[in-house]
Amino acid sequence: MTISPVIPIPIMVIICIALIALKRKGAWNFTRQIIISVLIFAINLRLAIPSDNVTVVKNDIDVLFVVDNTISMLAEDYGSDEERRMDAVRKDVETIMNEFEGARFGLITFDDTANYLIPYTSESSIVLSAVQTLEGRLKEYAGGTSLNISYDAMQQVLENNLGLTDDDDDDDEEDIDEISGENRVQVVFYISDGEITSGDRLRSFERISELVDTGAVLGYGTSAGGPMHVRSYDDDGYELLQYYDNNYNYVTAISKIDEDNLKDLAADINIPYFHMVNHSDLNGAIEAVKLSISEGNFDREKQTGEGQLEIYYILAGVLAALLIYDMIYYRKRLGQER
Figure 1 (cartoon, rainbow, N blue to C red):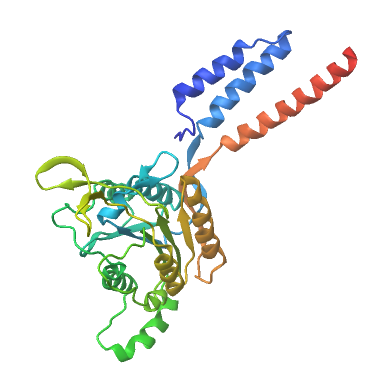
Figure 2: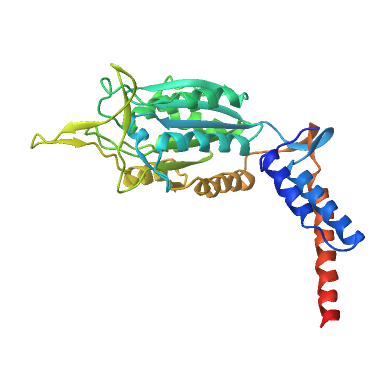
């Protein structure tokens, strides 16, 4: 049996003890109170038992994370606590991997160059560990950045994953037609603040759309922007990024999201764009991707095999029945007292 607590167990123990401490009058009433508290505790554990007769989706989904690792992703303007953008990205990547359990995950990062850090793997912990190490370039080596840097790496990874060859550009259309025969769903989560500081214009990503089944562009940052504490070659810690302006004033650098670039990129790839202001904003992106997979013509199938059978919903049914009983009982009691 496995557990996946929603609320940490120590906190739930305190809550349940507090519920029991509010002792009701009458033996049966107090017994129900204890049973309800125990059920709440057990439901929170999300109990699951091993089973060889669980309906599971085939492991035919490949999720590619393309993560902006430029120093602007260290800007502190995420959420009400002004969290660093990259810290929010770490949490969101973990959530996505939990939601797409059973998929394979790959990771591309880009700053001044693009890096295919993690080839597709079902070991999500490897990808998460790699994301945890992303801290932007050293201040001394950070140059102008551009979303265009990610293009070639994305194209190569996605084509290779589908077994396509690109020896002759004239054969591109013929190669793309072969994708429908593949048994993998290509999902891309493109994660960035959209800033282009190299002077480039955003190139067309339409070719990528032919290689992607679904996904989302996730934009981090605000229009007001935020300061950045970055790593320096001469310092083990972080220092506030500052520079001299045209009037030789020493000012703090502020990074602002460029949603126009992100929306254009999403339109080219034919996937939706989501502005990530709070962690809850990720729910819409995940649901959109799941819906497009379930409704898509991907020749998906379900099969019976080994897995974890969740049983907490059975306890939830018992809890609901007791709560309904309680409501009816106390309404009648109040009516009698009047």
